[in-house]
Every structure is written in structure tokens, then in C-alpha cells.
Image (cartoon, rainbow, N blue to C red):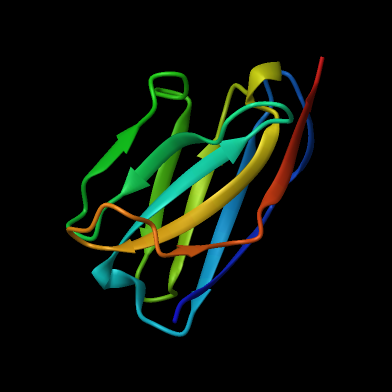
Length: 118
């Protein structure tokens, strides 16, 4: 079992930055792909980005160039640095984990809210 706890959400103005963190317990993260998802009210959950156990990262087109995912396997944490925030980035952000090579995310955090004001 892996327990994931997100933190770092809050209120930020358009153009501002936030850094979200996801702390894991129960298992070492280095064998897991770690991803960030988000869900705004009335919308489907959407993929934000992923850092794979092998070290590669990918991002949704909507956040590419503005968001950066990093992982610290020693500290068992994953971070999402969000810059140049837009109104459409407002959502509940979730981190998720899956064993490398699998397609389904087995573990999810409870989410952290990001609000962007103009």
C-alpha cells in the first residue's frame, strides 16, 4: 500500500506560481510512475504530467512550458512547480502512483485545491 498526501495548494493571482508537493508513505517511490491530475468543478479529471520511475517526464499540452514535475526518491516526494498560472488552471490537484509498466494508477491522494484569481 502507498499513501499519498498532497499539500501546497492555495489562492494565487493570475501569472503567479505555486508549488505542490506529494508525500508518499508505505512504499519507496522509485519503483512507481508518479503523475499529477486535476479536476475542475463540472469537468472531467485531466492528466497534467508524469514522472516515470526511469526518469522521463511528460506533460499535457495545456501546461507544457509552465509546469515542472520533479521527484526526490530519497525523500519519497514528488513536486509540481506551477508557473504563469492561468484561470483555467484552477482545480483540485491529485497525485497518483502506478507501478512502472502498468496502465492503471493504483494509489491516489486526497487532493489539494488551487484557486487562481484575476
